[in-house]
Amino acid sequence: MSKKRAAARKPYDPPPPPPPALLDTMAARIARLPRLVRMALAAVVSAVITGAIGISAFTLLFQLPVNQLPENILSLMLLGLAVVGVVMYWVGWRVMLGFDFDEEPLQPGRAAVLWLCFGMIVLIVAIVLSIVAALEATGPA
Image 1 (cartoon, rainbow, N blue to C red):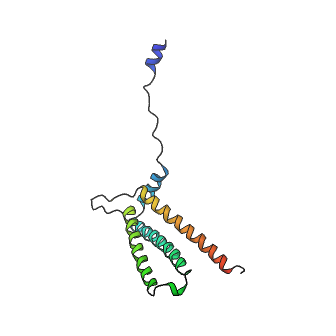
Image 2 (cartoon, rainbow, N blue to C red):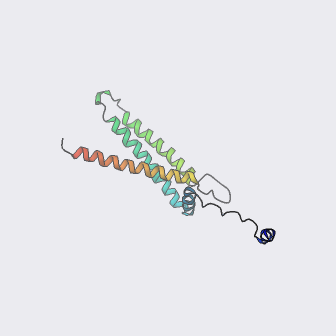
Image 3 (tube, rainbow, N blue to C red):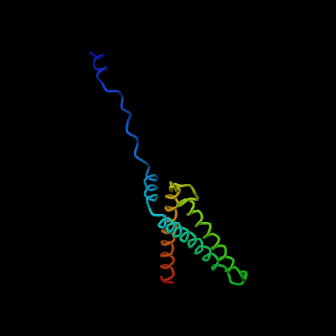
């Protein structure tokens, strides 16, 4: 009887494939966004990162005594921040839009998701630190 049962059984069905990872699901959602929205997201993330770097640099700069600072330090810092902003936008453009000139445009992947998450983390940390600094500045001396 066991031979009959074995013959009557269905062939082995492989298990269903595992669901896509969270990063892949989010990358697919980003890929469905219009190109203009992805450009704006790249610009916002680069502005957030550049702003956070600028705020922290100026905070460190203004803690130094005035007579120890070179005369053109602010101009040099603003020029450096402009370069950092352009580089950050280039990175954002690369991961969100790509530099593909084929018929079919490049689809954003996990790097785009990680770039947006990094920008959100930087924004949240900058907001929290700004609130803490404002509370310390307005608190009792």
